[in-house]
Image 1: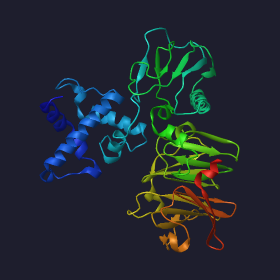
Image 2: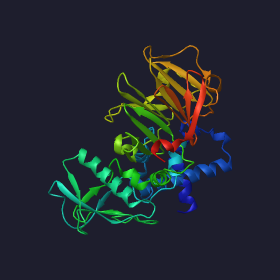
Image 3: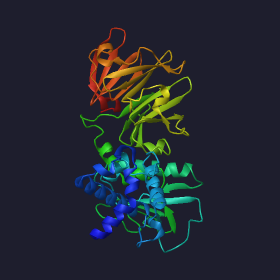
Image 4: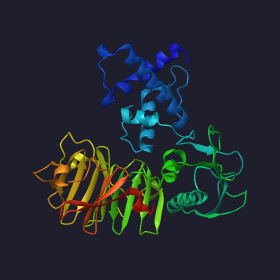
Length: 399
């Protein structure tokens, strides 16, 4: 793309960028450095949407270069990553665009020229080539779990085959692999769209890292919460569910919680309604029994002031109180009155001596508070206000 083309492209799409709440710039104050950075970011965004979301700029004047079409594709991308669907290139969207990733499009129908659609409900699959980054057993488990998600949402049933002519052939590739059948192939299904809830574990670099480093002594969790007798551990977009010391399920978050494609900053379970609250940035969802989630809501609905932009950790204490931790402060929320207490906020180090901040996660279990701070978990006795035990955070996963 020449200099003239770049200038035209920037002039055409810049309003979508400059309109972003976090990137508003007065026209008279734009320096040449800022202007160059905006041009680079916009060009990067257009190329990203072209490559992964079938956006076509086309020749000058072509209707697909219109603002609405680009904005629509940007909303598709934001929806896929669990962001607010503004259609504007804000800082959160740009951060995702700049994150290293696989080259396989997120929403594309991979078409093979032979054969027709499956005319059966029982489908065979085979794993032809493994990755050296993951244990074979882990790959087998995740592929099986992914197909289980598909089966639950369709009349299809899947079984594993050793045949190289299975209905679905799964292979892992590296570096450039954006052909019609990049790494997951199906020679007998003419129009197979891999935009299923488990797609992101396959395309994202985050999941292999999370699995491989499960027992890394430096591993920390984004959030931890109990849900009934189970305990959920969130890391990036990955989830471990511990039912007991020996039974741990794992996989992408959206393989257990459909349509949630975000990282989870904080979480807590409210036993009276069996609702789980999941926080990401300034928003949260409620989920019941790993089923349908609510609409995305703002954390301000709890009564937090505008100065609170996100929640670091949350934990429900019996007798209808929930604690919210943010930076070096915490807030008490009365679940019965649906309101924050008037004494808020309070200082963490004052009321919980020995606990550092910020707190990554918190769990109330067997009469004790367990604070996850970085790669460590602190067992805290609320009666004597004292830390009585410190262990590695991933010791809760059997490491």
